Image 1 (cartoon, rainbow, N blue to C red):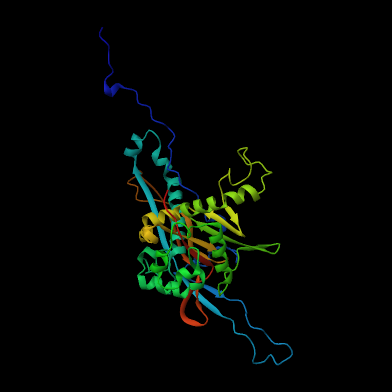
Image 2: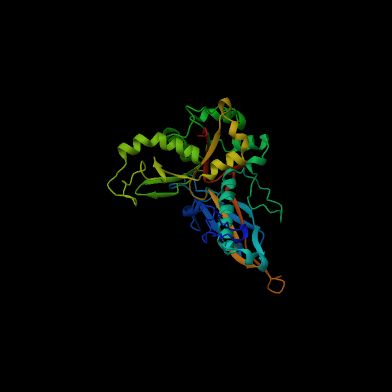
Length: 384
């Protein structure tokens, strides 16, 4: 029997009309970003009318004992203040095509340009916030028009000497594992090398220790919010450290957390069944998976920095004004004007901003730069 076959060029080809865009996570920092004075990440808008650098005044609380009935003249207290500078830089991207290529497109790929550019901007801001939290404070601003929006010495570019100076200047707000004594050497690489995969993981007791470090720091790290006499901080952690904390809190969540309400999927509203932030000892711990990605792809020396060449990851326990996000221009769409009589189509996005971990000079040390609202913790965090 002679079976008729269809020539390749005559075969019916169906393409899905729905483009499955790569999943891009919303900025996990967004709920903690605002213009309010008590925000963890302060949004500043002063340069929207123009300018290259933004000055951010920082004023500490009064600590003097004052006077009773004795003469106040001559016994006034000086206000400790500092002006932190932030440099603004542009960020732009675009997608361009021609009518010839659009004619071939069966799935409206180029129709995805705007949402793809939006996702690109969100990812960029999230990643640069992570880089800023890990950066070392410096009064040297990025080079003008150098394409750098993260202010500070980025951790992966810092020398051993710069890292040691950062540790010395911020010894009251940096924790290595399960003991403050792990930093006694004053050498960052030595301190990280003490972290072992048993005692120095990100567990509930070590989270409490990191909180105590933040509470006892001077100048103090103000809590994110206070409610009914209770103080709350927020800690950002990667997937590995967040995993270790969840394991440590499993019994506590099972035995102590309320479970009367029902979650959106019918399961009890309990972290054993529902993913989300963990809360313990007045600290809200939020997972930002890209922190772990930074260890894998950017801060690569941390992959083998711990005891027995173990992996180490940072966490950032934050209070008020831990970081600043200064806008020169909010993100807006742009369009190509050189269109070759309408044959070329281009759409883009542009924005101008700078991001930094907030810091100030210590009042008793003219050169020491203190990170203002964040306590940094380093913990052993083996990969799965």
